[in-house]
Length: 270
Image (cartoon, rainbow, N blue to C red; front, side, top):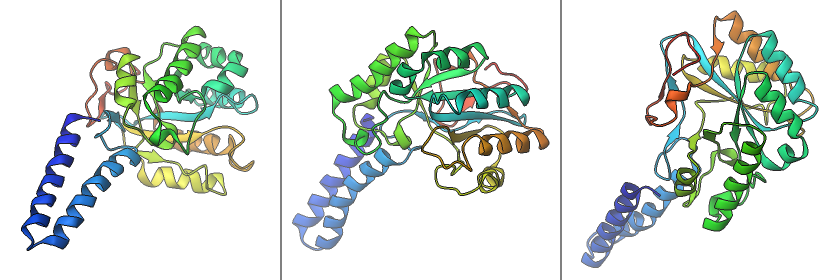
């Protein structure tokens, strides 16, 4: 947790206690007391809020460029097809991969890297239901085990994405120890609950702006009508509108603004 969030929460609770003890604003005091905790929970659960750790949810560019991110792989059925699509549309992507399937299919990680794309970490087991309350040792294990595995496969790791974007109180320290930065998104495609590729594409296009970070998925958790097909339609729609899918350059690693990551217009380098 960042110091300012802790100080702000404690200040609200102290104010609340004063109001409760004073007696005139007892109801307001109790609302503030419990609301302060709710404020922390909001930062815990909201993918783009900054109270638990620095999070990048867009990058700054004047050109029609987006950062395409694909979560939950690698998938032996989907990943090769997605790589072919990216080649077809001259697009680059960051694959936020889970450690367990990466360990089972190391050749897919090597293929992603060999085709000019980027690997990010997405924890080792993808503990959706429990990562938010994971302790220090488990958070360290989820991040470190995936980190070591992917590094051993040749990945130059810079980015981390939490399962469904939910952080925890120990994440900031763990990411700093491994030199990782948390990346969220500015456009959630909805492919995990949509029924057609057209609805996924429509959702993205309705919010499309230069510098957007797009969230899509691969793997068996998606319906057959969505798997790969949604990414194909999105890439085609982006090309028709003159948008390019780019990767952040190496100089963006050390200092990222919470307002956005600087990338030179018309370039894959920051």
